[in-house]
Image (cartoon, rainbow, N blue to C red; front, side, top):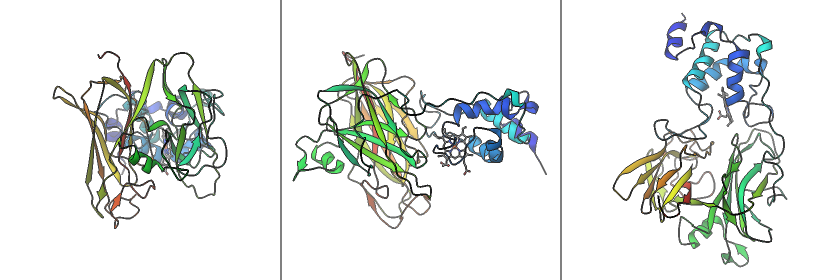
Amino acid sequence: MRFPLPVLLLVAAPASAAEVTFTRDVAPILNRHCVHCHRPGEIAPMSLATYREARPWARSIQRAVTSRAMPPWFAEPSVGEWANDPSLSEEEIGTIVAWVERGAPPGNPALMPEPPRFTEGWQLGEPDSVPADGPDLFLNQFVTLDIPERRWIRAVEFRPGAPQVNHHQLAFKADFTGMVEDGVPLTPKEALRASGSVDGRGYFNVLAMWGAGTAPTEFRDGAGRWIEPGAVVVMNQHYHPNGEEQTDRTLIGLHFGKGELRSEIQAVIAGEMEFLIPAGAPDHRVEYRHEIARDSMIVSYLPHMHLRGRRMSYTAHYPDGDSELLLEVPEYDFNWQLFYYPEKPKLVPAGTVIEIVAVYDNSEANPNNPDPTRAVGFGLQSTDEMMFGFFELVEVNGGP
Ligand code: HEC
């Protein structure tokens, strides 16, 4: 028995549902939202660039878009508005569903849109400095920056060597001056501890983050971040094994700003490192509170946990007693490390407390859990845990 009609009604099918075809209606949606990841040599397992490639996946595509599993995005839609939200509109989802329900017809080949163009090599042009050029990188590689004077960075671009297996990479800027023991730089954990503050202000900063399918980090309007000669760039890399042995040589390109740095982007690492999630705990909560020292605008959020991470939220408790939920990630997925850029930067007056709540599932019901029998605390391996609610802010001179 078939029930095509109720399905169509439920998803707000376009008026001309009977005529929905691949070339005219579906290909433009895939080109806009999917093909930068779903093309040969990229991270996604199959290409969706042509009718022949997409047609066998029609049912999976329908499932992926109606469940909103694709494109990957994890912010609760009722909280905040996001400049980089890639989600499909209800109408776009309706178009795809109508196409699949019609038997996924190809349509007139003459109406096939031009394939999107992707820049090969550096997307932002030749960088000013490529500090991570060199030997194959290991997890948490340290690279000392060789620049003659203090500069400010206006853009950072990662160029992953093997995009099929590169999932995400985080670059930290660390100032380990004086944080050396027996000639060996402290590990990020030791350095964080030694800095005396989990927020690690000034010592340990997120420089940039790259995830499959994300655009390079580019600060606009004279905004950027200082970097000093001898600063250490720490690369934290995560790979997604695809069954074949791969060699990755990732480059990181830094673009220096010209003229005056107008607003300094500060990365806040708000997080707890002293916690223990009991073995089997299905719903373990860890909280951290970070007080904003000076009137600021929050320009980005980056929730970070590992495989047991289940939910994370950021709430502002304002000095006047009001509270506001800023970002809610109800179904966190370690495989997708995403920055959330608010449509409008959020003003947080001095004294505002940003409360980060992380919830972990260390039970066997969590399919990603590497070992539910183990109590787990902070650590750098993905089989250990982390609790960081990174965010970036710009101080507001003279207050609002
Ligand atoms: C940021 C990169 C990215 C974007 C954008 C993206 N995908 Fe994916 N997609 C992936 C990756 C990686 C996988 C495989 C791993 C996974 O499922 O998370 C995947 C898996 C899928 C699957 C599941 C395949 C299976 O094994 O069942 C479907 C279907 C799919 N994507 C469709 C889409 C559609 C349709 C869009 C656009 C509306 C889209 N994707 C956008 C990266 C992406």
